[in-house]
Amino acid sequence: MKVRLILYILGISALVGSISQNIYTPILPDIQSALHTTPYLTNLTISVFTIALAIMQIVYGPFIDDKGRKKVLLPSMLLYIIASIGCTFSNSIYTLLLFRALQGIGAAAIPVVAATVIGDLFEGKQRGKAMGTYQMLLSLASVIGPLIGGFIGARSGHPGIFFFLSISGLILLLLNLLFLPETKSENVQTRKFSLTHFSTIARNSTGLVVLVLGFIQFYTFYSFLVFLPSILNHMYNINPEKIGVAFLPLSLCLMLGSFLSGRLQGDVKPTTSLLYTCLMNVLSVILFITLAHISMICLIITISLYGLTIGFSTPIQSRLLTDEFLHERATAIGVYNFVRYIGMATGPIAGSFLAHGGNFFLPFGFAALLFGGAILFSWKWLHKAESQANM
Image (cartoon, rainbow, N blue to C red; front, side, top):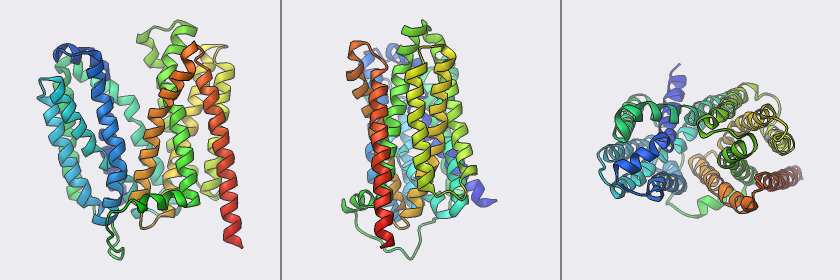
């Protein structure tokens, strides 16, 4: 019972850290007006959080492996709370930018510690089931973040939103202080921080495959998030107020896929499951390109299928890393999260270049080609590694 409680505490902690990224997007114009600033600087408050979140993934990983899970999590959560309070009382855009960067630095440790502790506490199929539950909780962020932000922001503006995050962070800090055990093995020798820790992950066949596929999955996923509003507007004349509704099936299917993943992982090898689910990712992108122009229903079904399959795949990737890297779990999770964030950033940038002529489906065709190449590379690489291991 206690390990299940720890799982939910970690999952909700990661959820709160994740919604911090997008919770106030519904009131961005109000923030711009309240702080007498520009749209660029207002949007930058989201970017600095994301950049800090991404970079700190690879910084925290080795320290968590060396110093311990709880020893790193508690101070980072305290920093998150202090930064959230700073955001609450910021009366200028530059002060808000500073505290948003600190907020991202504090929040970055939570997903690394959470996935690492789950790997420590659970084994085998139970680990896969726990990862599925954790990813399902984490995927709630895209659904409830803007809803909570819109509700609170309409009544108390951005100070109310950041005050909510401050209180939530404080409650979760106390829960982790009381219930989270230190799961770092005492038999693992403490090592000094070194960049070679990162190359260990990429040199491993399983690690490299997970990194490559994780990058391209989130490259494609964020291409959907960025270009879907334009496609809906140009193709079906959907107004901005209703575009948000179109994202709901995608988010719900993402949650459903994460839930099912943990419960359906059985006798099939995780690497085989990963390749099959990624193949379904590619097929859903191809179906989107082929069918999205036929009707709104076809468009919603195909993007929902992508959400379902990526939701199914993500817990498998986390399980593979925690299975493979017993003494470098946090480092592996940190590198994996960093690569995914780079994919999130790269997809919209590359897609904007490809869609410059107004063809919004070209970015998805390019993503499908990349995806297919990544799966072929992964299959050959894993087959080669297995052949060498059997020699």
